[in-house]
Image 1 (cartoon, rainbow, N blue to C red):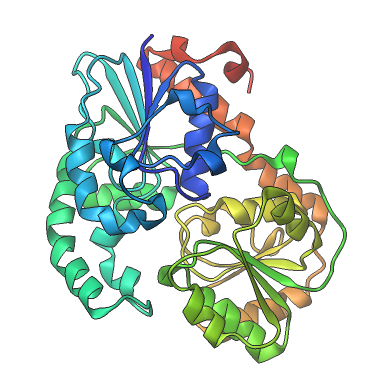
Image 2: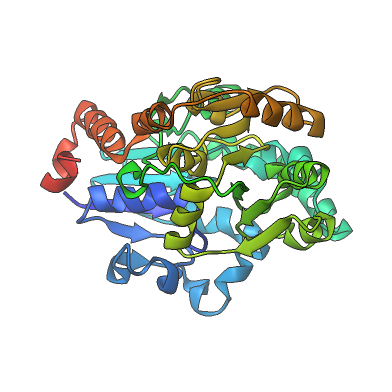
Length: 370
């Protein structure tokens, strides 16, 4: 079969990129289409020879990919992949819009409907966006919602990465979706009983991720907090942080796995669409303290693999940390919860879906075995 995979952009490590990389592993003969591809970061995980980027890739630095937001809808909506029998798009915003033949199959894996269109108020609240960016975002969000809803009709089959995202698809697009949770490589994460006493966050530093609450909790308690990740809010968060908070920016995978193994707990104070990093922390046997919304409400078992809190406030997070301190959680039970979201589970669910659609022959033999 002629198979294609489409992803918005490969410029930073995140849950969406991990899914796209796993799809490329499961569909080893597929061509990959995207806008930007950072070969230095991703070239060891996907052969760059498979990857087709847009014409602007040679003219712009991919690190400024957000500045080109107005151009993405037109590019993906015009991307003609009608020659492919199967297209699997991995979409946080744009990739689902590509053109495919009616007689062929387009499966769209939806990480979230376009957040900055549907939830721009949440996206900008508390952010360091300038006045011009806020004005532009407010102006564009209406037309982008219309475009997002219209292009959501193009895929033959929608797959949501969580029940929370499935509900947003229903509310905003008027369609239903299967749910297949993202793949977590739990075998890569070793169970650890080491506890060096620090709290851990690993996230893109965007305002809606509410890393500010984790920083405030560290300031209030004097607890050591390590923040992994980069983004537009890093400078503001560093100004906000006290001496017990360390920002490490982007770190190699080995360093992140080491931090999972040595932390006391992993913090999630913003609403995740799914949240792969919290599951990886649980695979290391470490409890997760998370807001009881979005993906973490589906992955964290309160009182078993962590603590969920309802109020997205400093007091809510501090109360959850106090409750965690009073619990004696079993690291093996925590890891068992994480293993429910293993790569093999994803591969099996994806193979079943393609089988129902009559295109299961697209999977390689090694992929079918998980």
